[in-house]
Image (cartoon, rainbow, N blue to C red; front, side, top):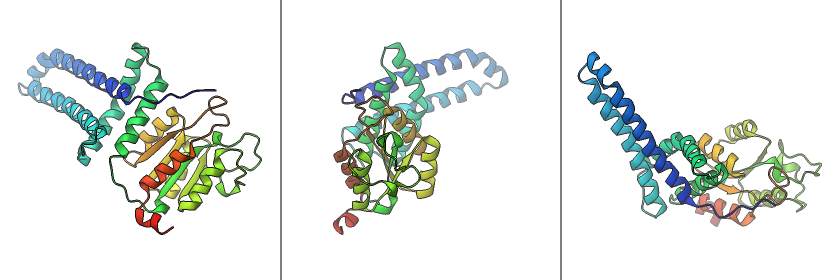
Length: 259
């Protein structure tokens, strides 16, 4: 059984901060080396290039500060949220690289990323109609011996209770939201394009959640990590209570009251 410990937000935040510092140092060295050549072209170019570097690094630092404050419950201006995630998505590969140096596994960084994302989403007050909310999950959530294929038509599920698909489908029908099961990233993107939701509850492993959250940004996504009692990508399960909690968070309360 593959165990998943409680993700620690500080892992990802610390690595992103370190990545920003390293990036700033590299940009400074590039500026330092290029000054003589830039001066020969135009005496103003070194100053312009320098201020450009300061602006970019400043945006990174302000964005990260905004994320920390948001996690602590301090309201964050939407423009800062947007550029913060732009910066974080850019720095994510650097954070993973630093993680290798400090012997931090990629899966731990991805779990931390998902936790940070969920915390930021929870700082907002969404009011989304039920028909614009979507549950998206990989096909490994279905029992491998089940003969009822559901990747093209979720209604083929018999809700027998032998896997988590039936429980999620019951929730989807209860609240009137969409649900889809995908065999991979390409099909998942096609399903999102077809439904055009305004919010997604994604159930998957940390790797798929990380890439999916980045792919659909700025659409809000709450990631629910699957449970893997038989290892990765085989007969996985999910905590249904967490899925329902995410639905209720996104759902327009007017829609919910009417049910």
